[in-house]
Image (cartoon, rainbow, N blue to C red; front, top):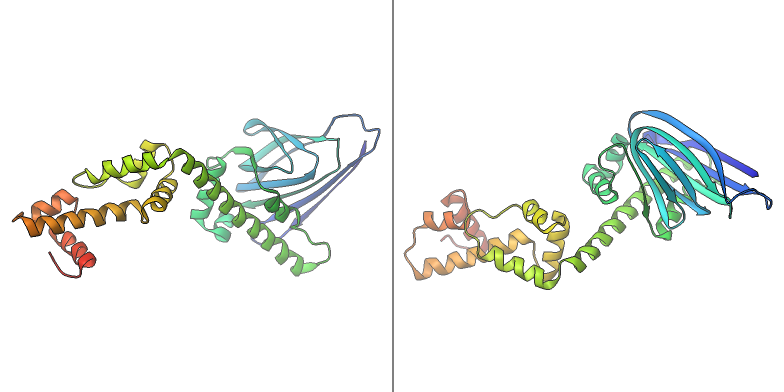
Length: 286
C-alpha cells in the first residue's frame, strides 16, 4: 500500500516528539488504511497533542472510548496516563504528522499551573482520561509540524524542539482565549452587560464573587470580567467598589449616617477596611 516511517525524539523535561510520514501507492486499496493498534502507559498523567499535513488520521480511542478524526484544520489532544488506540489513515493524500507528549508536571514547569488549567479547560480535557480534536489555525499547527529540524544535531536540536513545543503551547493558549472572548462577546451583548451593571449597583452588602456571577450567566469568570472591562473600562469588582465609595462620599456629606452602618451596607468587614478604601480613592479619610 505504501511506506510509513516514524522517528521518536526525546528532549529534556520528559518531552517526547514523534515525527511520522506516510506515503501511499497509486493503486493503494482505500480510502482508508488500518495502520496499527497502539497502547501503553506512562508513569504519570501525560498530555499529548498532534498535527498533520496532507490527509487525515482517525483514532478509535478506548481510554476513554471515543472516535477522534484530525487533520490540518484540527489538532489532536489527549490527557491520560494509559492509552489504547486503533489508528487509521486516509489514503487520498500523503500524510506528515507530528505528535508531542509530556508529563503534566513537566507541562506545569514549562507554562505554569494557571496556563495549564486555562489550556485544559478551553480544550475540555481537564479531567483525565480525556481526548478530543479541536480546530487550530494553520499558522499554529505549522509550529508543531516544524518541531524537528533535520539540519540540527545533539543538544541544539533538543533545545530547538523544546522551544517549538513551548511556542506552540503559548500560541495555542492565546488563540483559545481570544476565540472564547470573541464568542462570549457575541453572547454577552451590551444590553446584558448593562442589565448586570444595574443589578450590581442596586446590591447592598457583600458583593457576590465573580465566579458566582459568571456561573449564573453561564460563562467563565475570566470571560465575564474581560467583557465587562471592555464595556466599562475597569474590572467588575473595581467598578462596583469605586461606585459604592462615591455613594458613601455623598452620604457622608449629606447625612449623619454612622460609618459602621455605611460600611456594613457597602459590604466591608469592618469600619477600618472601609476607611482605608475610602482614603485610597479620595486621598483623605471619611
